[in-house]
Image 1 (cartoon, helix red, strand yellow):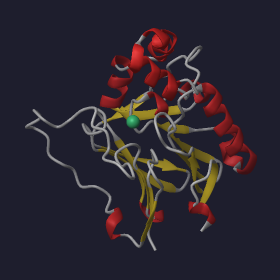
Image 2 (tube, rainbow, N blue to C red; image 1 turned 45 degrees about the vertical axis):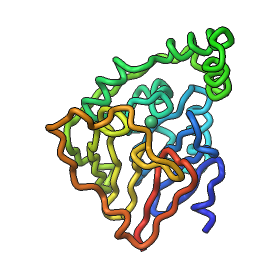
Image 3 (cartoon, rainbow, N blue to C red; image 1 turned 90 degrees about the vertical axis):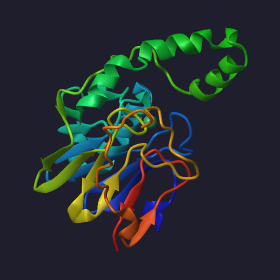
Length: 240
Ligand SMILES: [Zn+2]
């Protein structure tokens, strides 16, 4: 099915749900998505830099009228490849878990990434690796734009007449990972909670968190079909 082919760009998943994919899904090449209803729109994640995010928005606006104005944005977590492009939709309501919002402030900033890249040639093998994986991205001139609405646990939002559930499942990949679940369409955007072809990176391991209790997760394994590609940063499942 063409909608599930792992090619760069916008993929229409049906019923006004779209994925935006960036093969090969390795370091920094995250995926994103958009859900619309009438003129209302919800963007799921921005990308690692302004150029990539603008390209994604331009692509969406060519074929999705409701993308002309992004009403809401959800950042699934605080890693830069899911939020450094936020300033391009600064007029939107930007939603994240409180822990993600906190980690966006305390985590690695775009300025630090830009500095790291400049220092990479003098950092030996580590610098060579950092330069190789991050040089495709441009971290200068990014103004980190933080969420203006936060939640803990679960938040249900309306995108037009469509109900979308935000489910906080961190600490896991990061401090406050959020799943974006559209129950009526049986679609879930998992951010970096799920990698294909490798174990998800646990930036915030559960070790030492005796208070942690797993929350119920959307049951993608029970649904009719599941499609994903190698190392996508957003995994998409759709029921039969
Ligand atoms: Zn991540």
